[in-house]
Image 1: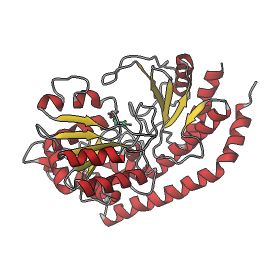
Image 2: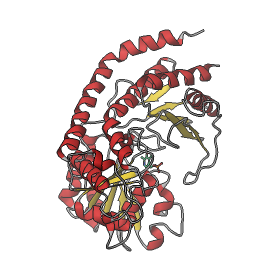
Image 3: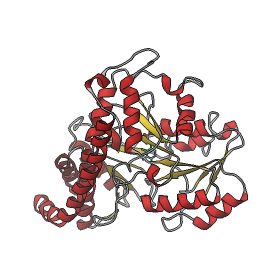
Image 4: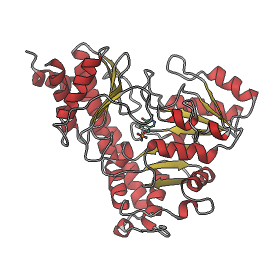
Length: 408
Ligand SMILES: *Cc1c(COP(=O)(O)O)cnc(C)c1O
């Protein structure tokens, strides 16, 4: 019988240097957050709330200024009226694109839920149904196809380029900030008026720079992922250039009203505290992912990224090549969760996804994936996408629970 406690001790010894790097990253990003809080004079008064139209919500407006500072950009829209990250991405795309415009994805096919938004899966409410043209350039060897991007931009005007950093449910690698920086330089050189939009889900605070600091025009992410710190109960953000954020705000609310409306309904305190916790929670998630990566590699599984590889997001892939093993691992993550540990996750159809998906998430916030969670589409090669961990210790316990279930 394999002694998992012993193996995990060995693995942790091996990871000490990596963990130290993550502690340094956490300190750096914590400094970013506290500076933003201090400069904006965050105060108890900002925990107050508005109802109804939500005029003059100083807490909400201060949160948006704090986000602008953290992303080093002109403006932010941080709202609990966003249902999800996909909703914020939808609002952003519909805010920026008009009939006959071209949307170009340069990371291959975007995240599954965007299929219906764009019209890749035909939908009466898609961008394509409004006459927006969609084009795509695939990655080559996990990097941008710089030549093809340049050629395309020289041919005719592209209104929006979308870059999705995290891999979603694909088998590619996630895209680091250096590559994002390099491709934005190219885009701006060839076509300065093309808007560069980033799907930043799962990537916040994993590096020292955010995409707005390397030239991205507009950046989108979810608050039940990294920046919500496990405390925000819902919502998402859009940050970037002022005129573009305005277009998004007018799509989310009302043309002519934009950011002026939108009641915070009690969310301000949680959003602020979640952001405050986010650097530390992201660090715990990273440590949990690295721990899982090293453990599973030792047990003979193919993992991506490996424990010592550069990380761009909090997601850990484990390749099972076997549906039963994927399901068992997810069951074990669920069994090691604080909430609904006795529930049995079962692969099922999900709105927005084509294959059956299994999702293990015993979370305080429904669907929150900054909390330890593990999911994957039931398609070959049966990859688990594990992410989150509010504390490293609970993350480690969850991973050990998953391995135990897998080996039963
Ligand atoms: C999570 C995620 C989204 C948005 O998903 P929601 O569940 O709608 O918040 C979009 N893109 C990527 C890459 C993601 O990881």
